[in-house]
Image (cartoon, rainbow, N blue to C red; front, top):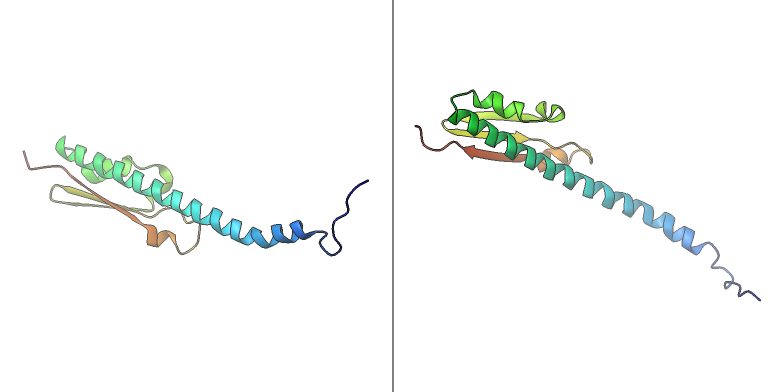
Length: 115
């Protein structure tokens, strides 16, 4: 013989699941945005270092920094060269609208003293 659930509790798990879906979605979006920000920081660091290396080699550092960025990020990047420093600012992909600009990555690479 099967035990029957107490009266009035049928479907409780389904109701709890539906109630938790917005929270689960919010956590997933926040995690995705943080991953995008981390990727932007990594890419900005690589681009800044590529620009500094190009400067040491006598090449154009801003062009080298832009070349080091993947296609999607070139429009989101700002590369500036001041003296022997290459600064790259990169806005991550917006998973959560309005948050990406606040998680902008800025990395500076120094080419060292002039030769």
